[in-house]
Image 1: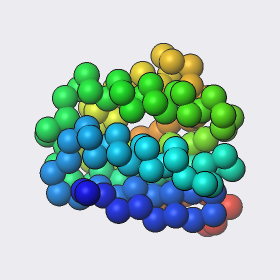
Image 2: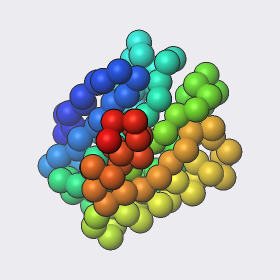
Image 3: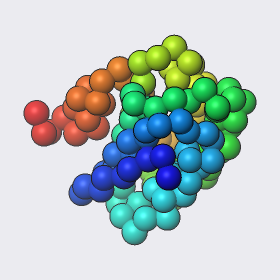
Length: 127
């Protein structure tokens, strides 16, 4: 498993490390959507700052986008923060966000270059 997950009240942070492929992302998606807190869910941060995403093909982000869209049918307002800095990971994140928008998923997706900025957007009340 190339990620760690931290749970908080109505939130999660998935921190990826080492070399990852789409299967690790799909597994993390399953952990999120299968969690007991998901029905009262508010925000999820996906931290790709310290991992290598080069094994993920651009067209492979379709699967987590479609799974995420299906999950938003039961949870009306969710924020999903994607955190990345390197060019290729940013390209993957932008592709995911574009697919989410095209699918008209109810979740709001934003891309950040720092974990602090992502968490501030998710939980502005915790300044």
